[in-house]
Image 1 (spheres, rainbow, N blue to C red):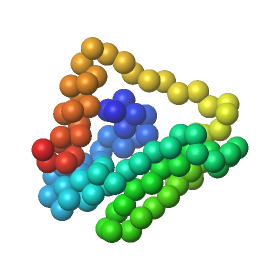
Image 2 (cartoon, rainbow, N blue to C red):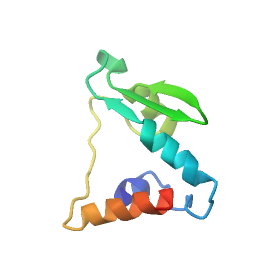
Image 3 (cartoon, rainbow, N blue to C red):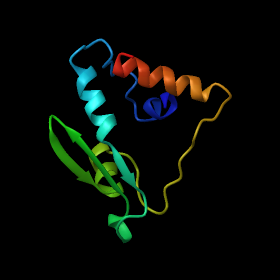
Image 4 (cartoon, rainbow, N blue to C red):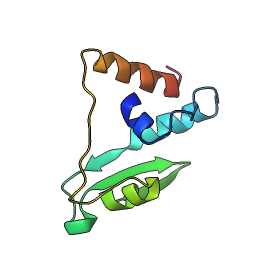
Length: 99
């Protein structure tokens, strides 16, 4: 996760120091549902979640465009793997949710 955040240049984003984000993070994570095979063609994939009580629905392409990340059939991604990855993920999610 830290690798992805670094690639998106979000490393200076510090949500953990703002206590008001804890409930928002929990609302988002508890409502998040992802269906990678939903839809067709450029509208394939569906992510659903809730923020501030408002439901949202986005396709893969919508999310990629919103986040200004490369998308499409010709895009390659790098994934960092390591023995401590599970620990890092737990640590990251715990730091942004306050748990």
